[in-house]
Length: 171
Image (cartoon, rainbow, N blue to C red; front, side):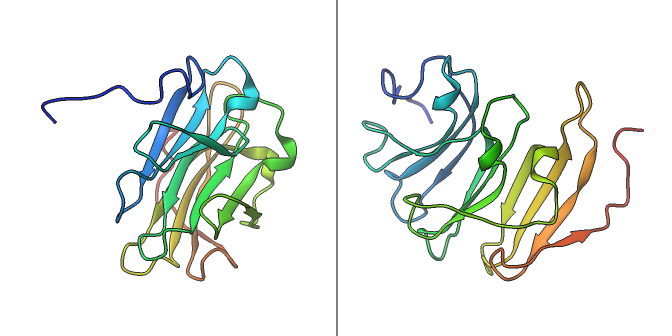
C-alpha cells in the first residue's frame, strides 16, 4: 500500500465511476470492475474484466451495475445486477445475472422482484458455501431508495427467498 500504479487509463471509459471490484482469489491479475455511472456513453456501463493486471480490459456485461461478486471456489461463476439506479436504456438487462464462464455469457435469474423496480443493490457471497448469495435490493423512486428486501439463495441462484428485515432505515 505504500506505492500505487494507475491502470486502465485510456482503456476504461473516461469519467467512469467504478462502484465495486472483484479480484480473482487465485490470480490477482484477473479483476472485474463494475462501472455504475459517469461514463459519457451509457453503453460503457457494466462489467469490465482484465486478465493482465489492468493493462487491457474487456467489456463483458452491458448494463448499469453497482455490484459484482465472484465465487471463491469456482472463479468462473460471478453474479451482478442490472439496475436503472443511474438511468440508462438497458430494460432488457435489468435484474440479477449469473455467469458460469467468467463473463463470456450471462443468465438472468428470477429473484421474484420486478426488474424495473431494482435500484441500488448490495451483493455478498459465502466463502465457505458459495451457493449462498445475498442481495440487498432497494427500489428506484426518485430521491429516496426504499428497501425492497434482502433476498437469499442457497442453490446458486436457482431459487430466492425474501428475508425479513427487522428495521425500516427510511424512518
